[in-house]
Every structure is written in C-alpha cells, then in structure tokens.
Amino acid sequence: MVLIGDKPILWHVMSIYASQGFTDFVIAGGYKFEVIEEWVSRYDFSGWSVQALDTGLNTQTGGRIRQCLEYIGNEAVFVTYGDGVGNVPVSKVLAHHKAKGKLSTVTAVHPPARFGVVEIENGLVTHFGEKDHTKVGWINGGFFVLEPDVVNYIHDDSEPFEKYSLPRLVSENQLASYGHEGFWQPMDTLREKNLLTELFEGGNPPWFQF
Image (tube, rainbow, N blue to C red; front, side, top):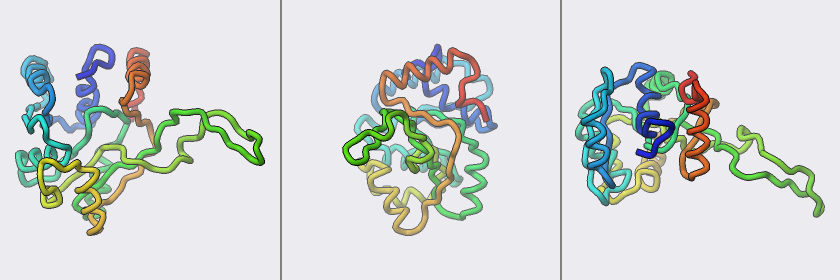
C-alpha cells in the first residue's frame, strides 16, 4: 500500500495487467490485510473485479500462491509480487507460456544497476561508472504464469515459493522463461520508491509504455 504518487503500488501493478485487458484480480493478503481489504471495498476500480483473500499472517509466498490457485480454480493465472513494476507484455508472456506447454513460466529481467562499477586491471582502475544492465544477466522479474497443477509443487503454507516450489518445477523441467528486455524496477528501498514516484509524477511512466 506504499504510495507511488497518489496511488498504492498495488494499483500500479494491477494497472499493468488491466491496461492490457486482464481485469480480474485476487490479492493475497497477510500483514495489514485489513488495510488492503478496506481499500478494495472503498476504491472505484472502474470495471475491474477485485477480491482480497486473507491467506494468513505467517503464510509464506508459496502458501499464498497455493491458496489463490485453489480459490480461483481450474485455469491458468498470472501471478506477481506487489513491489515491482515493468512494461511486461503479459499477453506475449501468456502466448509464450502456452507455446512451451509447461506448468509455469517466469519473466526474466535484467537487474537495474544499483552501484557504480569498478573494473580493475593490474591494480589500476580501467573503468568507473554504471554497468550496462543488459550485460549483467537475468534475474527473476516476478511476473509468472501458473497452471493449476502448480499447487502440487507447494507442500505447505510455510514454504517460500522461490526457495522450494520453483526448484521443484525446474527439477521436472516444468519452468519456462520469457526474457523481458524492457523497463523493470523493483521497489525495495526508499531510494527506489522515490525514483518510481518521480517517474510517475513526470507523466507517462515507463511501466505503462508497452
């Protein structure tokens, strides 16, 4: 519920999907669930279908996803975190997921440069500055497509999805990836929150530029 401009970051994340035609949402709540629940009950979502699901205060990400999958039923779903935005073309991610025929697909992104890079040769600095983020490699961007059977890879509510379920899917060759070369930015620090606010208030934020 941290504000980016005058809207919670949850709204920004959901708008990435809604602006591409996907408007049915289930929010997996835990800590401060009552705040999210009140927001959902009062905000005018203009045609969106939004439900807040209390998945338990101590439930880990795997358990939250399992409960949502069971709640939604027998269909593939998009899953993402509530603290990162990007101009991810979710229809293309879904098409890629279907083409691969796996139980799950993760959107891979290049990490944004957070620190100045120092390159050293023979004790002398040969380069100082930002590193091209496209040369850093790929990380989990947090935009998933999951089939209902992914619940079988989540053993209990205490499991973080990334630590246990994803490796199980990998071990059975059931995790595909979609490489996203566009904008992506997490919000893990106050500096990143301020950066996103600045981009939003500047007009036409990059996470809505598809």
